[in-house]
Image (cartoon, rainbow, N blue to C red; front, top):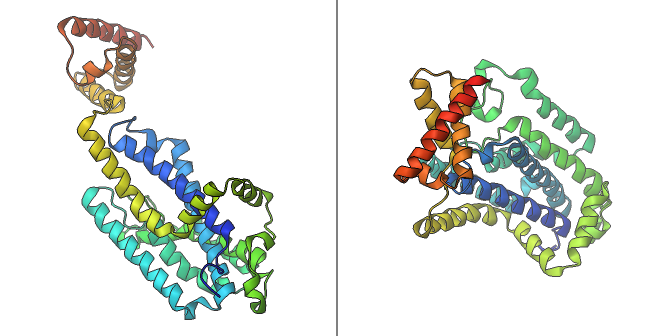
Length: 339
């Protein structure tokens, strides 16, 4: 059976969608990193859960893909192609760690999504050919493990990868084995119910997305809708088939683009940084922190309304503008002190 025949367009398409969602997530992060939007934008609750949803989708599709590969080719632990692909992921994860320690030494990626995929794939192997209920049970066990077994014994950096520590280490992408292994096992269970249960080893060549009895109508409907525009479907599916390359290339391209853009254009000043610096200076002068925070936020809002924000943030106010901002600052302080 050829490589193309062993793939499901639906799985590749959904993986492609997850990749493009990841690109959007990283685009927001990069826009903030380079100062084009508010520095805190990537850390809002919406972005937090958006990032988690993307990670869950990747890991669940890993589980489905493991079942698909086993159904098409036999036991994975004997598959040279599986181990070659696994080695590629490990090398890619190592490269990302090395680069992140250089670019972000205080928040490096020491166990991100690729590290998790590599290790979780090994833990998932015993479940790939087992009844789906075992993968489901294993998934719930992995999901609940940090709640019951977290301990200071795992707080040492040597054990951060387990996810059983009592605090979250600083990292730009931290996906420890627990609880994230759960979503790979849930994907295995889904794959076992939908793929392996439909095809015997004597009919592997019959695997096609049209024949798979997906329990939820949404993915199949999404696939049919996408196929109405063949170019979109092919483009997204192509990305899904080359997911590791997409993952490794998209951030260098985004970083390169914003670096070049910075040579010809200046991003808007970061209001969040200005407010933090303003508040620190205010507190150092003996004013209550809450009053300082409110008055500094008020100054920024009034400066923006008056069209003076860019000049204020960059220290380019003219004498008349300085007088205007000074008067506004006094009014902001008086208003904040009242509450």
